[in-house]
Length: 167
Ligand code: FEO
Image (cartoon, rainbow, N blue to C red; front, side, top):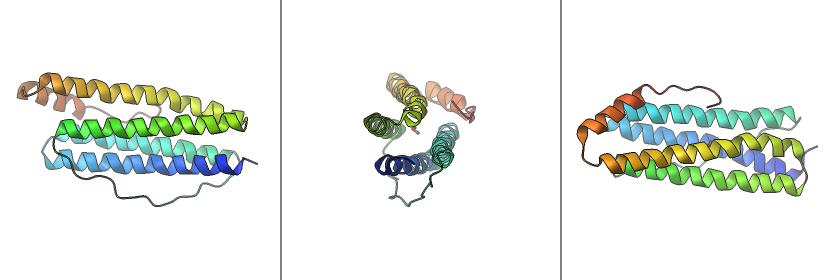
């Protein structure tokens, strides 16, 4: 039997990962409306990744013989001023996720729940990669500034992104 507080926190994180998918869908929709379909694809794939993360929590909770409880969530932000703004908001979102995963890990350590500690290691590594990815794109967008050729090359590159579970 899992510690109640830890179970609640695992459920909350599962729902937050679904919410993250929703957040990235809003970003994809903004990009589609702006006619930058490669960037839209990038965020559609990111939303898939977040659903994959949520399902990892769902499956883990079930594996422990507990019940995953699906909740609603607040409306994601749909207001963006530019593609740079989109990526800056994406990085902010990932930093929130990182803090939440660390908090969850602290909680698992507090109650010596080693299966959960081990489960969360994947997420700790994943967050390092996700923050790095968004940070690199922000730096690139700042560097290319008003170079429309470089911008459309980036859009073409993002059009090729596909969802690979585990990445
Ligand atoms: Fe599931 Fe992008 O953190």
